[in-house]
Amino acid sequence: MERWMLNSLKISLVIIGFTILMISIFWLPSAANTLADQNPEYAYLKYPLLFDIYLTCIPFYIGVYNGFVILRLIEKDKAFTEYTNRSLTYVFYSSIAIILLYIIGMLYLLLNNALHPSLFLLGIGIIFMSFIIASAAGVIKALLIKVIEIKNEHDLTI
Image (cartoon, rainbow, N blue to C red; front, side):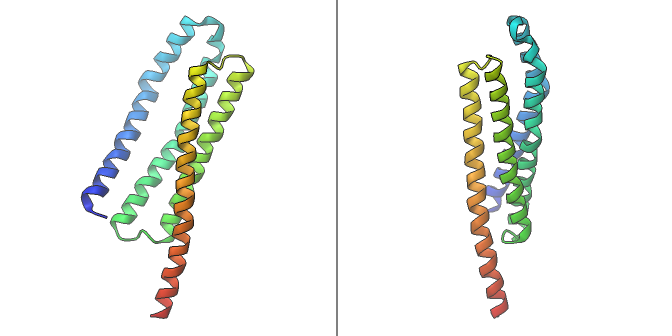
């Protein structure tokens, strides 16, 4: 892979991670306060929802970090190693964790009769994107395992 492409992917990961961090630190608390003030009947949901959203940041940043690790391994021509396989596994499980946390959060809102259709669509969108990432990581991981097996057989032949 060309160096400029790897650098652009690294920059993209940093920008995405930084953007989510800034949203989590600055926008989410003020938005939660505003929504709690505008809708006092749902004010009791402010902290559980913030907790769930902040909890989803943990697997998100694990996935972003492991994406960065994969890009560094590709840069060092070590893409077909067990380290890449391990990082893909972490990305897969991080995506699954995000899916589960959003399903739990949406069920909590549904049981409290507070699941607005726009929140439902946003949650489904995040779940769908995480499912796509988990599926892609799983397929790439399976392919990588086959490539590593073929590479090891080839190395033994020579």
